[in-house]
Amino acid sequence: MRSARTLLALFALASFVPALAAPPKAAAPTPPSNYETATLAAGCFWGTEEFFRKVPGVMATRVGYSGGKDKASYEQVSNGNTGHAETLELKFDPKKISYEQLLTLFFKMHDPTTPNQQGNDIGPQYRSAIFTHSEEQKKTAEKLLEKITRSKAWSRPIVTEIKPAGSFFQAEDYHQKYLVKNPGGYDNHFLRDLNFDPVQR
Image (tube, rainbow, N blue to C red; front, side, top):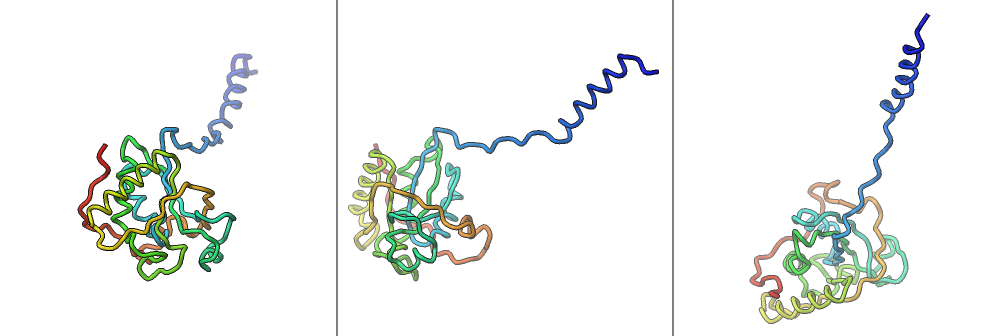
């Protein structure tokens, strides 16, 4: 006959085994509170996301639609009459990259001089825009735009909109990280060798 001590040991082991077999799921990590948000429109959001997701200091990206009032689908936005622009929303660590450095890349990775157009993509949904999330972001964007204009790095006038960020409507799942899922897919974004630097404080 088993001793009381043995029975207690078996009972304890039986209680412990299920915990080993099915550990509780860890909660999804939340972005640190010191991350900041930038919302940028630079033509087709596939290439915009693919460019910025590789930039050191950019911690998360998602694509969607900004500038319009109501939620809309890709098909509706593609008609060009909803007011939305194809947009990238990114989270960045300001200790690793500043907002002005992100905007400097923004002004080099697409053509900000073509109204409602980016390469072969034509329509207001492909316009160049910066949707700001604070007065500081607005001032930084305006100061950098003025500096680039004075530099004449772009020979034609820059038409980039600078507007307060409104609602951001996340695009359909198949658009997220599209060029990761479809290597070699359509992308007309690349870094130009232009002579201007980030804003100097």
